[in-house]
Image 1 (cartoon, rainbow, N blue to C red):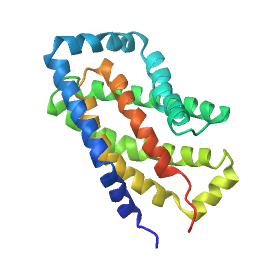
Image 2: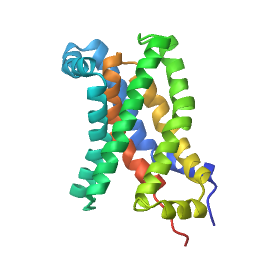
Image 3: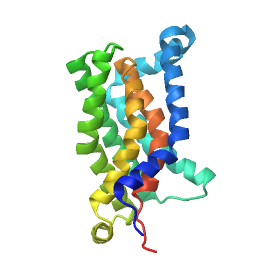
Image 4: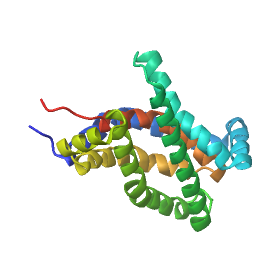
Length: 222
């Protein structure tokens, strides 16, 4: 019996409660450490300086590496799952583009809502991020992009896969599981200065991409 997309999303969110909770706790400790411990602030300072100096020249390749290349390398080393050259090209181009989107999103939000670590600045950024940018841009890109990849980059196979399981039944579970991790993660990210938001997003992204791959892969009927 097929599971309803909302139920599937809730199940996915529950399955990731423990790693998600660990991730959030580590993020909160990092925020506290950055604002209270000089050693932590100094350690992150050079990354922020690099991001501030290079702008999208840092955001695009770093996101392509953390979101695209690193998960494939991880799967090769620890899961013994090889990837083709086309997979690496897809991952680099896809996540490089996502890095550009996120970089522009963060800059736009900083201009609109300020950069201070206050709830008046953080709350509207999280709402715009998770309830406008994610459903309108991020989730469609991820669902359709990874489905196309799993269908060997063939449009006919992609259309057939969507006929078996439509877009909404794929995107709704991903959206719900996304909110379970990224609403608190986004609050943590926006607690940092603008120049550190993309680097921190990339650290969380490495774990999230693996979840995206699992949820959006094509499913066969029993």
